[in-house]
Image (tube, rainbow, N blue to C red; front, side):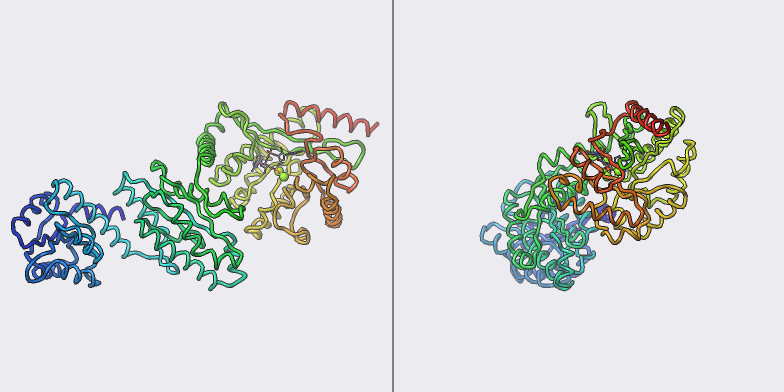
Length: 570
Ligand code: C2E
Ligand code: MG
Ligand code: MG
């Protein structure tokens, strides 16, 4: 579209000046001839001939209202009612206030009061009107979203950049609208019902947004994007939209959510601006009485922090700011609790921000793909650590590493992990891979295939965070895993809530039947530990024994383990 606009900018556009007074025509011609090719007509009828001859190339009509033969009103009405002509904007030239209103109502784009203002003002008004109409006309030549006849998303995004280009000083608001549980409504009441809802929202949005000179699109499914000049009553506008659609929606158990990012920061690219509105929109996902949220300073700070982390990551890798910690996993069913393996958990020792926990950066890096690099670093470190302990103490302490879903979908992933293990001088059975439960829910066939191949290559697979995803207990039998890691949620209240304990006992039954080792994660108290031991849980990982620690400090656990082994032999 930009190219298109630029090409149009190079040629001199045609402007038709219609006035019965030659002196008025000359004055306007003088003001505009530097920028435009001027055509002239002295009454409505003459003007109509010129317009019809130039209908594809004429950019604007400047129209006097009071003229003989055919007056300005009549011509204006002809233009506005002709589908082939109404794309040409008309600015009326008038000395009467009442005429201004009347002609605007009839479809005029703007008016220029007589006597004429400063030439610069008139030229600026002419320029702006032409630009605006060109934009609108390009719009009508492109595709709309079929269902809602709002713009489609590609066009919307392009159009936003054009608006930015032409109105660099206008404050703009970005808004995102989404429906809670839309897919559920679709399933419960059928697609036609869902479509009707979307159309209703679109119709309401279109009305209010147009009125405020904004644009809107259906971004996808039940997500709408809006970009419009800032108004102080933006909240009222969107409250009205919420009210318009809420009856039908809330009867069905849905809810509309609106995220507003007022007075956007123009230095952010347009996608990011819309993301900010989306962030606000998502911030009220679980709040059942909230419909509207603003992108605020707290979100801004979070966003800035996230951006900082992403910007610093490459450097951090090369400067070795990432440190791998190890948390002991203790076997508790035989003899005294003793070290059986460890989990590698990454930490970021940031020179300015201090120690950052993975909960803050892993989700970000999973989103932008940087996780691949980071995970490979951890895998290498962990493999080298297993080898180092083996050399120093003559004992293998297997280490498990976390594997993200996107790692698993990468072609060549298995070869890569195999190479890492080989290069470190260890074997796959000295290394374990943790795959979070939720990874199995999307692309599950593909993930299961990869996991099967990994097991054939000799790796053991742990299902991490079990109980947080969607796999049901009966699905477990078909998943190729060796170890089940119960998520902290099961453990947290096990000593106070009998239901949680019953759940763990049930899982243990199934695990035994399937021959799975069970690890309980996040064990902090003695009571929890006792109950889990009685329930038959094999391994415990948690603060009760140790937090994740620096490898230097981990040696103590290995020494204890060696003592334990010796005492068993003796
Ligand atoms: P995870 O794999 O489920 O790791 C267990 C988390 O539980 C760790 O948090 C650990 O410090 C914490 N934890 C262990 N015992 C206790 C306890 O008794 N009480 C409490 N409150 N917490 C306990 P951490 O280290 O903050 O890691 C969070 C998550 O970040 C990990 O969850 C994992 O999903 C991810 N992660 C960590 N390192 C890596 C990595 O190298 N690669 C990838 N892809 N993800 C990683
Ligand atoms: Mg883990
Ligand atoms: Mg876990």
